[in-house]
Amino acid sequence: PRSREAPELVIRHGRPREGRHSLQIEINRGLYMDEERIEKTAGFGPLKADIDRLIQAIAGFARRQSENYGIDQYGETDA
Image (cartoon, rainbow, N blue to C red; front, top):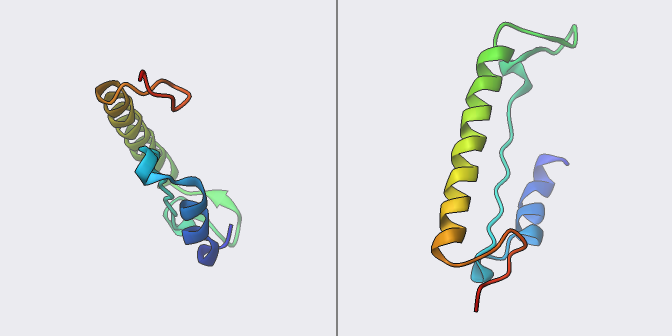
């Protein structure tokens, strides 16, 4: 999606009042790719490792929050 569509996607998929949040992260290709040659640069590996850690942290946070609020993997509450 184009950057101008980003807010619409977050709004469409997030439902904060229901405990369902949405997050979109945009990454500048210049950090990991030679855009003229369409090739990975030396920055690719370190950026991938950083993104992997970020995803693990976000997933862990979401898991803990769902456990705290009694929400299962399908977004249903125990109540």
